[in-house]
Amino acid sequence: MVTTIEIGGGPFVFSAAHAGLHNGQFEPLHGHTFSTTLRLTGELDETGMLTDFHLVKRALTEVLAPLRRRTLMPGNAPGVTCLIEDGQMFIECGTKRYSLPAEDVALLPLANTTTEAIATHVLDQLVPYLRDEPGLTGLELFLAEAPDTGARVAADIASLCLPPQVEAVL
Image: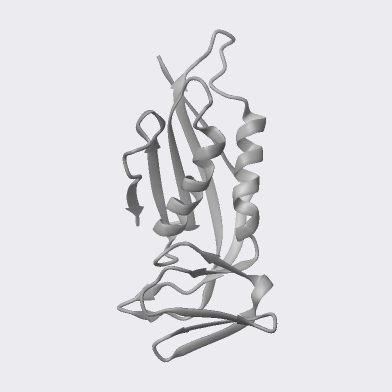
């Protein structure tokens, strides 16, 4: 029988700023209080456990730590240049140029910092922590940027060669 557990809320809520790209231009820089919920599915072991909650909570805490109270910017976006000079990060695209303290920026290996892309990044970062857990067959991460808007990303651990499935929730 397949069992599902969920871990989220409380310590897995974080605030961050971002400026998504739309038609090759940054939207205005703004922030969200993101709420993360991780759903794990699989078969219970002989002791009646799917996985150790402490392991999952520690992994989620470590993956979210670099995003907390940072400005999330895309590091692989066409037309965007990033330069660090004297402790400042300069990010340019089109007519906009941001200058921020480099330590306050999380430059993500993404083409955009949409909620969908951030959710995919978080799930990708979690997979190495959890893929070898016996019994786990699937991971699903829901990242909400507002009470009525979020993105759900899923990965089948048994066939990690498949790309994550992304579903925008509006």
